[in-house]
Amino acid sequence: MVLNTEHLGEIEFQKEDIIHFPKGIPGFEDEKEFIVVLTGDIEFPFSYLQSVKSNDLAFIVTDPFLFLTEYDFELSDEDADYIGITNVEQVDDIAIYSIVTIPEDVDQTTINISAPIVINLKKKLGKQVLLKEYDEMKHPLFKQKSGE
Image (cartoon, rainbow, N blue to C red; front, top):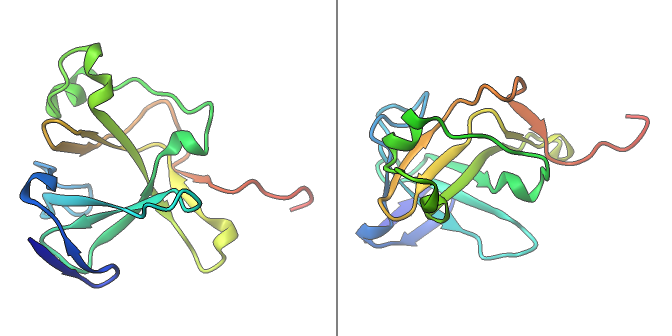
C-alpha cells in the first residue's frame, strides 16, 4: 500500500503495519488507523504517527524514556484490557510514545508525559492514555541553560 502524505511524502506500508485506535486519539476521534514511520536515524530519535485516513495528519512522537530517566507509570487494568494486554509477561509487546510539540523556537520543544500513546505491537491496538501520576502535560525536552 502507498500513502501520499503532506509532511513525509510517499510512504509504502503493509496492511499489517496499521495500528488501530478504536476510539481514535483525543481531539481526533475519527482517526482510527495510524502507522508508525521510523526515521531510522539514531541522532534523531523521533518517529511519526501518521494517519492512514488523512494524509495531512501526523504526530511527531518519541520514546519518553530516552529523555526522562525517572519517567514511570502503571497502566490501568482498563487501559491494559483495552489494548489486549492481559498479563505482566506481555510488557515486551508494548511500545510507548509521547507526542512532541516543536514550536518555532526549537529549544522550547516539549513532550506530553501525562498522556502517552501505548501500543500493543502484537495485536496492533493503540490508545492514548491519561495518567494521574503527572500534573504537567508538556515537559521540556531539552534542559534549560542556567540563568534562563
